[in-house]
Length: 481
Image (cartoon, rainbow, N blue to C red; front, side, top):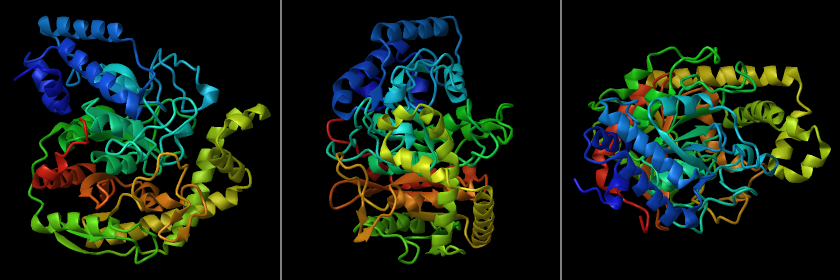
């Protein structure tokens, strides 16, 4: 195996881990190759921000090499460079949330996910860019500017884990973390031709957190260029924690197991555009339907599926939940009224709408959510997995704030164009975005697979089988990478 920088950065996370532990490549060589790739590509993509000094990183890599020389490994991520999404804390690094009000805040301790990744041996080289407060599936903010799509720098990277997805696609990092409330792991994965998993509700505990009982719609999770890397990072991120009382108690080492399986006979329900309810830009449905043919070729049964509840009712309940959870996150920044001038209008809208909500409205929306969940359980009596496009639009111009029109229909909120992603989130279900291929415009698109309650492992195995059946398409790299 050559130790040339370009070869090192092409490796997936588990292949890189194996090379390090077999001493085919040193941790210093890995870090040097990573920093060279970041120096080469990051100035144009702006995926990684708040970088750590290179000499300090090389010193940490040397320490990891010295540990291996003594026969000690910290874990599977030993010596692997990582950058943490800028919504999560890393001790000693700025945690800006993409907000000018937080641009100088330096975290005094690691968040739980960062703790777990460091304990597995990861070396943190910086943060990955995110939209302000993580709101909106387009990564731009006034602190660092926009992150550009890995395949076309004139286009959006998606979000809110846009920096993470681009860093992964451009081989700046071998695997990445992110988080997902309204498609924030799935949409940027689909737009940058990688895999992004939104785990089941409670699978990955989040700490610190403002609330650990009601705010369960957002979750951290993994992205990778290979499903096996997604699963392996999940094995590190997952696992119950006492600070998160609703976290799942399953043994997370399950996700480090072998993913090989025979998908023959699995039943996949194609939701499509929900019988015309969701506006979709041209070519998306056709590309995703073509990706579904791959499952048919593997012996799966693919049939049309219909939600058992009017989608507009789901959306209205979603709006209440979204505002009830997002509004209080913005409220502390508005204790000083002068701060309104430094908060983006979409965040202010969420906050101001939340002020009008009543407890009765939230309980009514919770009852609607319960009916929706029950309807999804009925759907899973017929299907093992549901499939739906990961986005309703192709990556759009990076200078736009958000699409105000989709396929001739006006969008009445800043996030209505992302409505397609809410169904897995609202039901607390696992969902993975798999690369569907490329449109006539040369841009990538993802297909979202939605699993049964707490069915993360079965979903990962199916996604792995899809990856094995489509290796040539999935192996395509962005220009210049």
